[in-house]
Image 1 (cartoon, rainbow, N blue to C red):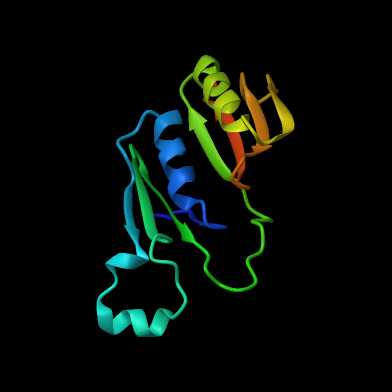
Image 2: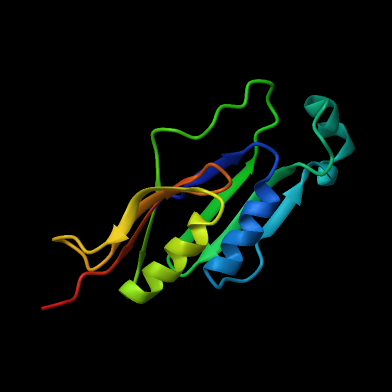
Length: 139
C-alpha cells in the first residue's frame, strides 16, 4: 500500500511543482494541462483555462507528489494537512526548509527536538503546509 499526497493550487501548480523539483533536486515534473484533453472531454470541462494544470507529478525516491490547479469557482486554501518531508541530515533539512520558506510563512522554526536533530513547519509561497525534518541518528 502507498499513500500519495495530491495537492491543489489556485492556478500556480506549474510554478509550485517546478520550484519543488529545483528545491528537492529532482527531475522536472511531469505536467499535463487542460489543453491536452481530448476534444470530447473538453465539453465536460467548459471554462477550464487551457494552461491550467490538470495533473502534475514529481517522482520521489520513495513515491510521488501529485497535484493540479483547482479550477472550481470556490477554491479554498489548503488546511488541516501538511506534507511531511524527512531527509538524511540536519544540513539538508536546513537547506530545504529555507528554500521552501522563501515567500511563505514559518510556523515553527527549524530546530533540534528530542526526536530529531532538525524539525520545523512552514507554509510555502504557494499555500502548502510542510513539516521538514532530519532523520534521527541511529544507535
